[in-house]
Image (cartoon, rainbow, N blue to C red; front, side, top):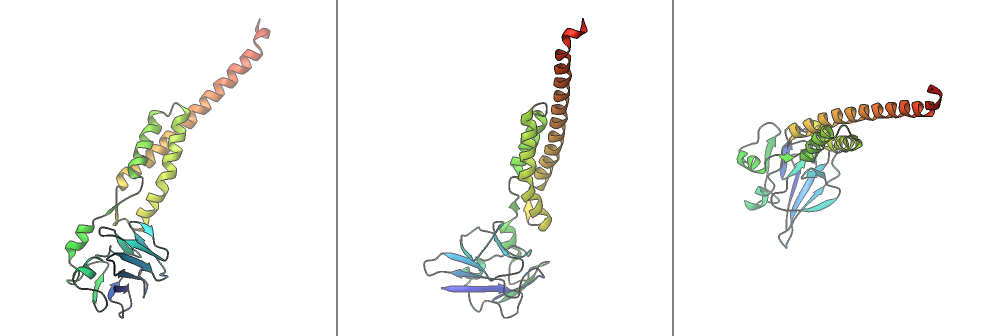
Length: 206
């Protein structure tokens, strides 16, 4: 079993010079059966795996994106494939990785897709198309609700996620569709009131 401790403190196996990383942030372990686990060490800004925060420990697999705080994604497989583990020490900053951690490893990880970006875009388009019906309002509200998490993630770390253009376009169209649908409903209600009033006093018009 091999374990790699990661944090800002120089006594860690992997030292990350980033203010959002705690002194002792997380530990990644290769178990005897070949599986890998990541454990957050009660860090201030948390550890995420594929965008989801880690509470305690969880199993990770090759290709999973592990992030400490708001630093760059960790090339964590490199720590074990090169005979790493305890005693494997390097440093890298949030601006430029050192030569000990090849830049290609970051490129291979890539960016994460914002959750529900495409769904929000589709809902926004549909809310505009059906803005003359109650369904347009409903779809617009759903689009606005789904966009919240993605917009928050993008504000937190815009360089880590892709798909913000789709998400933001869907968000704007959901707002417009909801407003147009609401105005149309108000228009219908007013005409129904006028019609109801006219029908109620119809006999007195003669």
